[in-house]
Image (cartoon, rainbow, N blue to C red; front, side, top):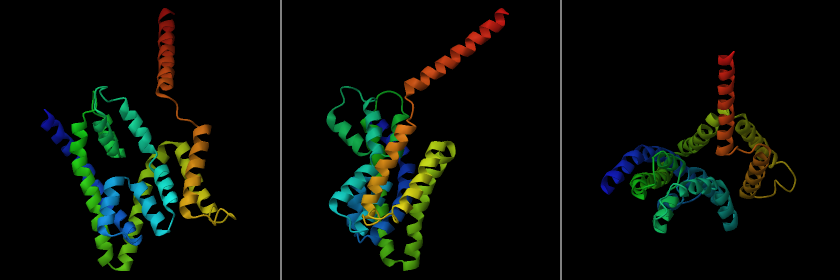
Length: 256
C-alpha cells in the first residue's frame, strides 16, 4: 500500500518537476550573474525550492545585500508558504509523528500544496515524499545547468534568458489579476511604488532588498486592512442565506 501511494506521488510529481526544471534553468542564469557556482546553485535551490524566493536571494546577492537583508527578503517573499503549511496541519492525522510533518512542510510549494490538498482524507506523507523525490532534484539540477550554460553561452543569449524569468512572474500575476480587481490594483500599485521608491529622497538611497521588504509588507498590510479576504464560514453563511431566500420565494409563489 505504501509503495502504491509513493508511486502515485512520483506520478503526480513528474510533470511538476519538468515544469520546475524549465523555470529553474532560467533562474540559474540569474544565479550565474550573481556569481554562484553550479554546486552553490544546486544547494540553494535544494533547500529553498521557491522561484520567487530564490530570485530575491540571487538578485540580493548580486546587489551585495547584507546577510540580514537577504534573510528578511527571503522570509517575506516566502511567507505564503507559512499559510499553506498552516492549512495542511488541519489535514494531518493527529497521530502523525513530528518528523513527517516537518518533512512535508519542507517540501511545500504552490504546486505540491495543490496536489496534496486535493487528495481526500488525511495527508499521507509517503505521497508527498514520492512527489518531492522527483520535483526537488529536477528543480535543483535545472538551476545548476542554467549556471553552467550561462558560463558558456554568449553574453547576449544570457541576457535574453535572464528576461525569461520575468515572463514567469507575469504568468503568475496576470491570470489572477484578470479575475480579481483587488489583485490587479495591488499589482499596479506595486509597480508604481517600486518605481517611485527609486526617485524619492532617502528611500532611493536604501538597497534594493530593503526597498522590496518595505514595499511588500506595507502594500500587503494596507490591502489586507482595506479589502480582507472573507472567511470560508462567512462565504458559506452568505450562500446559505441566498439559498434560504430563494426557497422562501419559491414557497411563497407556490402558495399564491
